[in-house]
Image (cartoon, rainbow, N blue to C red; front, side, top):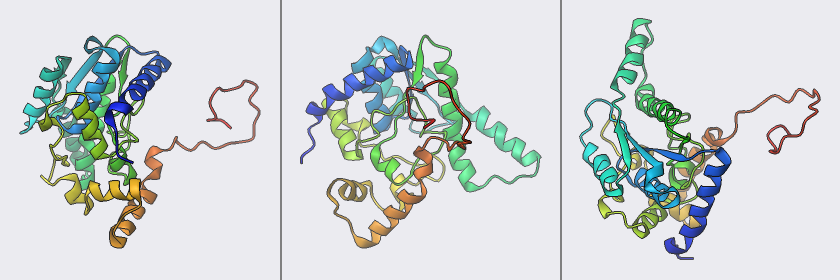
Length: 256
């Protein structure tokens, strides 16, 4: 079935409004990287809530060579925005680790900025009127666990969590975003490598597998393994059920 972005938008926007209402929120707070995911989520928030109820947060870690993409996006959408340099946070933690004699691994250095950025988004969301942090992850990344737990995997709800990278681009085009915000290759921000370089396969391969079941056997094994070992990132934290009575009913099934 061919993806129809125009047909998808009404239901998606209505769902976003329902989620915001359920959170008791008013203002969508979105981390802006200038890539397709954050650009499309920001544009969706403008469409769902009105630009006056959207705050974009640009979060370079020191000097960011492609910060012009982020700045260009908030200019195009004409949304309120803040530039918050997280270098003090990342360097402070790494310096303190060095002081106590713990050598920061490469993975620590890669994931730390994502977690600092999410902490920043929540700090800002809790300081603006009805601020709610909106997740910007997509299905292709989530399927293979290419996200940071308590970093970019966090947020109150995920508008793009069931859309592939290609579908995200189609939604962005339907929303009228300039192409440059939809084609910027995502990277880890440390090594200069793209996500696909680090994964060892393309998101297109993931998309073909997820949507059509078409995949090279060798790549299938890699995708399946990454999917299997990353599910913990998307599950509610396990809670020990001790058998003690609860005399009140919970509307969710969390305690059942």
